[in-house]
Image 1 (cartoon, rainbow, N blue to C red):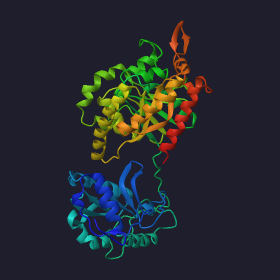
Image 2: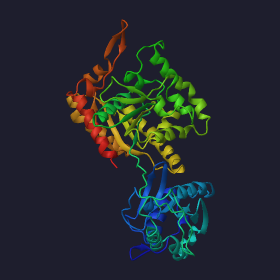
Image 3: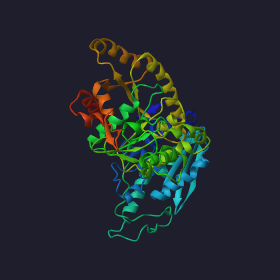
Image 4: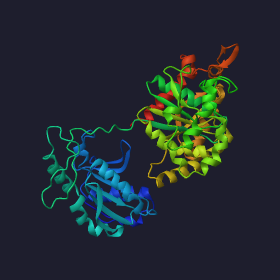
Length: 483
């Protein structure tokens, strides 16, 4: 691609191999600059309530998200993989434009380039060309959706916004020749940004301390003032036990019976029923402030084949998490030590991934399997227009406190993870210490029987080394996922 005056003078988007290249090479590097949009006037991966846009473009910098008039003067660009036909995505673009009252939208897979105009509650294709012809047609495209055109449209609209609150969503009259459009004359447009972050804790090797990491990290994050939800996606239900939601080995007590009928299996089995808020239990005694937990049950093991046959099952957890995205700040998902369906569900739903590892040879060899699964899931996420899951790092976990091991062997093993597998290590290290076992083994007497009464290590002994390690881990996680 040749450049002149800092701009690429020619680019053929039909040469893009996947959606990522359509977005980065075609839209970001070529199209937006040629239409006059500078950095700061466009935003990628924008979330507005339940709407997620690939690109939201404005004529002016620093738009105000709480002003509907500002949003309504933007341009939506949706990019698809070259392997996808654009037809199935037209309705979704129509929903975006009519819901946000945006006048123009672009739909492209690199091979085809289409501009749509919204007229009342419908959109109409007003320009179309092959990707290879975009360069020859860029002048025409600029006259429709260039920055100058959008800016003039914004100026025209700003003169029509009433200073007093009008009836909802009135139709504004446009001068002859202007594209008719529905203009919301509202003083504010509240679409709270998504703040919830979902983190999967996953390794296909068992015995690396996943559950211990999940529950104590959850408690440490809660201590930082975060509203935390933990999801137990392992049929062994170790997390459910670890936070004290299972008090007896049998199901005679009311709580255990509730868990057998109201757990993650029901959440995954129905799109309409069993919302997360109805299934989650508060682990009151485990830590302060308490955390919420979606429990697991051994019946989950038998549900895998049934869920695998349901076409939409892989989307259900993501959809239901979307419904509680303003109720929690952080969601931690404990996963099974396998490459099964539930591990995939976790990675599809999560924004971030932490891989706990004791750094022993078998665990390190398993990192290849983790990488393969993550690559496969990321390909699927791209196909459904989601960004790849981000790796926060490999967490050195259950590490021996032997001084010679810590000084000599541990640094070599941590370096090997980066050198051999190309994976970054987290700065935090969780050592295998006595207090981690003690806090999990606490019991109390109910009706003459000993029942589990586990505590998080940051509540059981806040001044111990293990508590400090998890507090440090919580701070590192918060720093890495900060918007």
